[in-house]
Amino acid sequence: MPECLLDFARGKASSSDDLEQGSDGTLVAEFRLAERMHRENVAANNYDSLSCAPSLGNAFHQCADVAGAGTISLDQASLWSTDAEDLYYGTLSGYLDASNASPFGVGCAGDQVGDGAVNSFDIAVFAFAMFQRAPYNVPLSTPTVTLRSDQEAQCESSKTRADWQTAIGVSFCPSSRRQLSSSSEAESRLQVSTASSLDAPFLGNASGGVLLERWAPSDVGNWYRIGIGGIQTVTELILGNVWADEAIGLVNKPYPRLSAPSTRVPADPNRMEVRWARRFELLGRVEARCQAIVNGVSGTAALIGDTLSVRQEGAPTQPVCAFDLFLFIPSSMTSSRKSDQFVGDVEIQVLAGSSWRGATSSAVLTRDVAVHTSEVGAIGAEIGPPMLPMPPSPPSLLRPPSPPPLAPVNATSDTLEDQSTGDGSRTAGIAIIASICALAVLVAFAFMRRLCNRKMAILDQPSHMKAVTAEQVDANFRITSGDSSSNESSPSALRA
Image 1: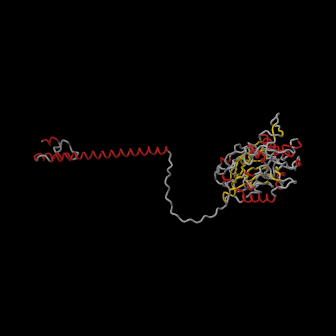
Image 2: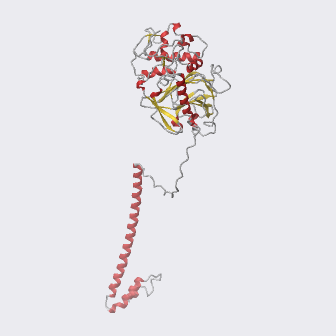
Image 3: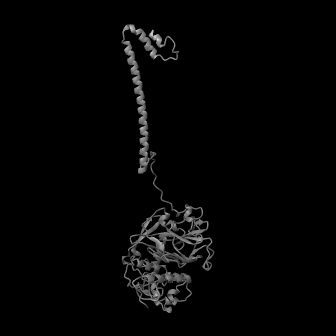
């Protein structure tokens, strides 16, 4: 058996696609090998690419099996801390203390062994190690796993991927080894995790910890929601009645909502589409701290054939957060493999053998999950998780109605400038009108004073002139429409 190191493969001088055992100082060859073997496993629906490798002269290919769903989470569940958002929504985020974690395989009688498959869990390990993400920030010469003693016997057997994953879900270690964590402990840990997650309203109708439901309608197909209890760091789901002839990557658009028809429109109505949403979003919240959800099959693919896989990536200081997947199935979808994968009289399924690595537990689905018809996301229903009743609030004292709020003072500089200009114009107008009025008063006062002065001057004249001048004054003050030739008002009469 070859010794498995983290850097165990390199390209031959003749071709970089043709590998040989040895180190080259990078993990590019290992990552590409794991991707290739995973694609072969999906296409053949078995793990012969791994179990038959020794008979093909490629025994070192088995060193690509460096992890499984139970890596870290099953052996080191105590290294995870989870944050419960509140009583109604259960655990939504968590952190890993990776300082003492065993990053490879699962412990069996003192050895770390893989799960007998090369899949998304192994691809994730090589991706984490390439970017030095803890606990995979280790030298490339670090030993990884001991090869399984029961692997070669599976070569060209009739076992499917679901058969193998279900079997190791019941008893992970080869028969010659004993798992360090007893199966009862692992089982109870899974049950506790599942039970606490099912208390949350997101998964009230889950089967085996998985909820598959028709979520939102579309004129050209249907959106389905896939929710899993707890928090998953790596997820690999085997789907029934689904087959993608070409690789499909995640689409980082808002999840489909009934309240926003534009979100239900796929980029290509004739092609499947995969989106995701954190549970925080379903609560109407925006949470920017969480790690990113990325493609799990390769750097650009989340769905190949019938296998859907994603993982969370980010800095150790970022929490991993609970999320759901949304899958669009077009009405016009056709595939040469779709009819072969049809399971029962249902639309799609999440099949037994699907597995995921959680924050405090790992799980392998042991039974098929069919579409659940629920009120959540169904046609005509309000979007969002079913809400549990909140505890009644204490009665509050009646209060007088509050006065209407003052208008907020949040104008921009342009608005203030416009307001100032308008106020100045109004002020100038008022000042002009006031000035005109004041001037009119002054003119009238001056005219009256002038007339009064003239009358006083006449009264001060000698007595022989008073009779004539008095009549003159009366004439000056008389307002009449009489004829100007009248003796009473003509200047000649006054001169006589």
